[in-house]
Image (tube, rainbow, N blue to C red):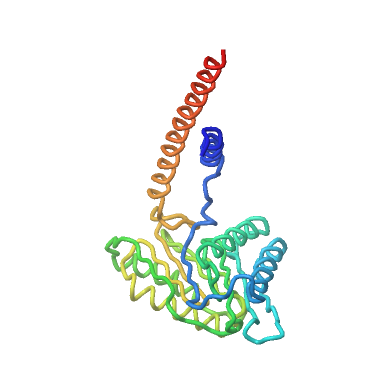
Length: 284
């Protein structure tokens, strides 16, 4: 590799490190999963996957939920997919989140016949096995914060908030928020579920949170088609994942790598100048 080409690469690395904005909470990674089956690159199935994911990204610019079915002349190539954004997001942040999730799918689930990525603000999923309208209470992710030793009053308030989210007034509410004192909570169903299926999924998630995160400062319970999250004041923010320290470490590392890249750029540049000067002297 010539000194000039190396200089260009180092310069681009430095530029990317200092111009990439900090990832907002809405784009924070929660979980991802991929089918064990792979499709053949260049096959009709790959074309269907690309078409589906493009449709999801385009649709997210004007709605916060949609699903698609890509039909094919051969049944194995039929593809199903959906996206959903958090209920408090508007079109702009929703579209950005879906685009981010799709890009991560391309990395995490390379050539996979099916895959799903859940970010803090959105879910994207596709598969060749139909899952649209199918209830799924499989536990996908559980996270419990540190125990804070609730008193009976605090535990009662926490449970009251969770019970409020799980209550039904007969209307279909896929996105729900609630709070009582120093406790807040949020819940959401994937909108391909019926009202009764959504209610059933949320009741299951709430029951598991109470049992598995009994005295935690915060807790997350993600099932296949819904999630419930709660947190005490000061333990986390609404959109966060409790990783503020990790975020600071990542920022510091990015700065250090940027400085190293800058020094490397200077060394390469000086080396290049020295060689140019030596050639100039030798030609005299």
